[in-house]
Length: 290
Length: 295
Ligand SMILES: Nc1ncnc2c1ncn2[C@@H]1O[C@H](COP(=O)(O)OP(=O)(O)OP(=O)(O)O)[C@@H](O)[C@H]1O
Ligand SMILES: [Mg+2]
Image (cartoon, rainbow over all chains, first blue to last red; front, side):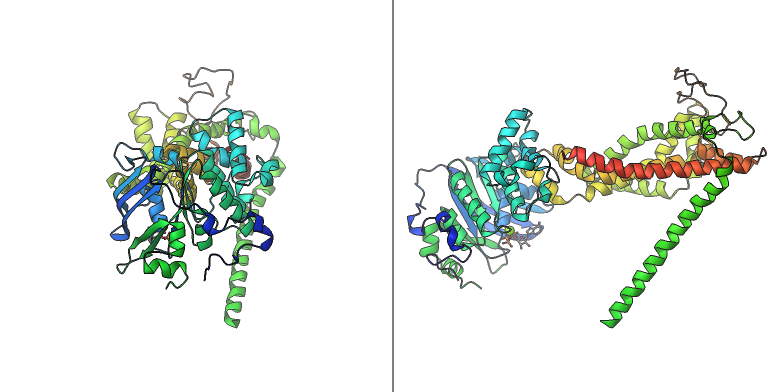
């Protein structure tokens, strides 16, 4: 289904100037000296008695983009949620193993989930703006973190909306229009802006473009490439081209015989898409899966 | 296909019939009291004392109804809403939660006259206060608190989980999430619950007979601000016959030549007040939500 060099069906020709450089030009590989931002070791997640994903071990280097790919239900969202302790909210969910942020155990008893979530932002699979004005949606995080200064808030709101490529569309009715009155794609960009506004160190994105049109998708992909300079990004996607375009490294998950998901292969994106080590990966990225 | 169309038509017809029936009954009730009371009604009826004219006024009892309503809601609203928040957000599955739920259901199914007797034993006899507005308000609290807790809890539980998750993912604490993401969405439901409760307070007679008392009040002197003086209309430590109790009393005692006119006019006032409450609540709910969500 996907030949990476071929024309991308999602991209109208007129958008060509915006498109990513060809795969070969991507630097992909990350220097061995890059600091490890996120680290998971033998992480398994159980929902009740059932193991959803097992024995995931991976490193995410600082200032890089990692993509999670794999068939539906293999546990990509589940693993993603481990990195900001959102699995804590699911009754019956258990996280085993060790998860580190900057080398510190995220699940140590002394660590408050709130502290983690201020450093690690999450953009949900479904857009979920608050039923408030656009301004209040973006200002929500900073306000809760104690920012009261109007001028500073205005500044943060504008910067975040600009970064999320939404500013021009909403700047005239920031305070008048509800976040729910936006289109699905605009809502998703609003949710991204809302996450950027808390100035996290890590951004987790769960299929952020699944509700977006090709133009908005490209804007988000551009944004991801820019954000990489300051943030560490993990993105779940079902779109192979997107994984290839935006990520430095790609992790491929699949479902095992025991119906539990596991990490099959993790490597530089270029390698995963051109010369994967595992046959399962090869089959999946070349569309011969299942 | 044809069968489901027929079923659809029948269902529509039945629902229409029920709606028309309900509206007819409502209009009939309001119409009856309007027709019955208009010939004798005058504005002074609302404000004058029972002893002023041959018919008498309902000024003091109307004041007592409003006074008791405010006093009761002063206790009920904060406790009920906080209780609802606790039940929806903090209560686990344990013994305590079960006990609370059990008592909620129990109290809801007890007739209000029984709650009134309980209130009499506790707030009139044991405390030695006698019949007081405060005793009445506390008795009303007993059987309105479970209702408001329940309604608040339901309103809070109806808030989508997405809303909470979004707030928590932005690094908000649990209380911040409740305060800034959950409550704004739940407010209209909570306000509806408050108004329902208020309506019950306004219309309640049985629970107040033995607690707030049923003596026909005399003239009130509103310049008397001494809260401990049982003659002051502002004091919670005084006999406070409400409009509903007054209707019951004037009907059952059957004294005077104008009993029926008084009862009918009072009933109309009661209905109109309840109507105002309900319309007011919708407006208030909407206004609150707009304000809280910053639109
Ligand atoms: N809240 C939950 N409670 C119970 N089981 C869950 C929950 N969330 C996910 N699961 C289960 O865990 C497994 C992995 O789900 P997950 O959502 O992580 O998959 P995914 O890879 O993100 O799939 P998709 O690509 O469809 O989003 C699935 O079998 C799912 O049924
Ligand atoms: Mg998912």
